[in-house]
Amino acid sequence: RLARLPQANLCGRLSLREVAAVMRGLALCVTPDTGPMHLADWLGVPVLDLSMGPVHARETGPVSPGQWVLRAAMSCVGCWSCRQARCSCKAAFTPEGVGRAVLALLDQPRGIPGGGDVAWPGLRLLRTGRDALGLHTLVPVGNVPSVGRSLEDFWQAAFLCFAGEDLAPQLRLRADALRAAAPALGERLRLALDRMLTGWARGGGRPLPENFWATQPPLLRIFAGHAQMTLQNADFSKSAWRCVLERAELLHRVLA
Image (cartoon, helix red, strand yellow):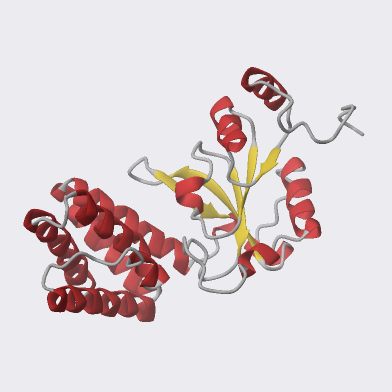
């Protein structure tokens, strides 16, 4: 009613240019991970990304600094493949919880609580930014300690190191930070890598099953998917196996 639109549902009724024009008039674009969400982000429109389901907000959410992400306050967030009969993380998004977040953002800076997810039980609010290297990152509101963030930072450094060995010191620093923030999690990740390497050795270089990456623990799944695609794209050649083995051994070594 406030928007004075003749109808609430405009799906399929606007051209891309018209969608952009509507976006520019928004005080806040509230949406899951969608094409229009990325369009709003590119246009500089304030975004609240409702990051729900088996996705990872650092990969599918808005990338411009200063945008907002709301996701479930659960340790399995970012799994990419839920093992449960239904995604519990979706249930955390109640109309009341999302509404409170929207009102707080529209009322900022007065309306943003400094205590993290206290104001929205079951949900966590984060803001997009840039780290010391100038790379995309997600910072919890109130800068509350987050084990998940330490793990995300570790994987970011790992893939940077894969692209250039000169960034290996950054990977070691992130590995140390992960172990300091969550010693048990760091050890679980090292043991998961150990099991993966052992399984590959027993497999003798045979092709991996199609569901290989999804059978791995969520904390290792991002590397398992990378390894599987690297091997598939090279038809499981010896050079591809050498590449993924060297990378897995590097990760295992910095976590030891």
